[in-house]
Image (cartoon, rainbow, N blue to C red; front, side, top):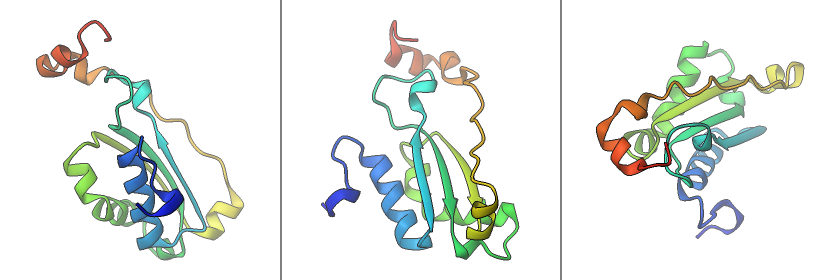
Length: 124
């Protein structure tokens, strides 16, 4: 393990944080596990919000910033992460506006998935 970056109880969140820190050297990084807002088993690591400010985003349109983050987190998105909300800013944009927008509410997509319904049992 790599010191305080790795939290044994939250391996996906720790991996997201470590990869973004290494690849983008952000001046600000928040990784929020929003799984509890969705119809998934307690303790899941499936829905995340990333708020990141990095000089690497300078000159890049928003779509390319998101693509860059998605490429860095390719393994997580192909595996356990079902949804990733990204707020990607330059350091200057972060200094001007440090507000973080609310994530949309759960639309209950997994409730209609028979496999997920079985996993959830009476929790959903």
